[in-house]
Image (cartoon, rainbow, N blue to C red; front, side, top):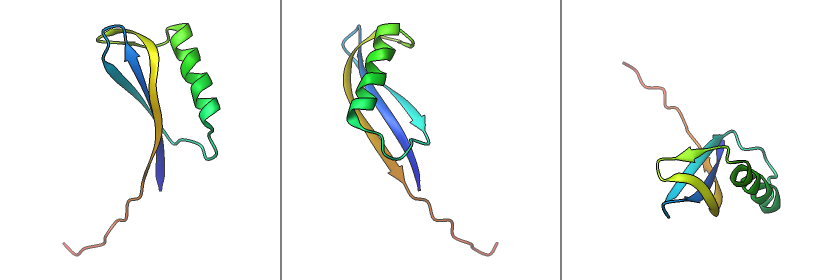
Length: 73
C-alpha cells in the first residue's frame, strides 16, 4: 500500500492549491503536519499560479492499494 500526504493551501487569489508528497511516513500527527505547513507559508517556499500560499486549507493522507493481476498475453 502506498501513502501520500496531500497539503492544501489557499493562495493569494483565494483559490485552493495542493502539494502532494509521496511515501508519507507512518505515524504523522496533525500537529507535525500543521507545523510544516506553517513553515512553508512563512518561508514562502512555493508559489502557485494564484500567487503566494497564504493560509492552510487542509491536509490528508491518501492510501492506495494496487494489486497486479497476471494475465496471459
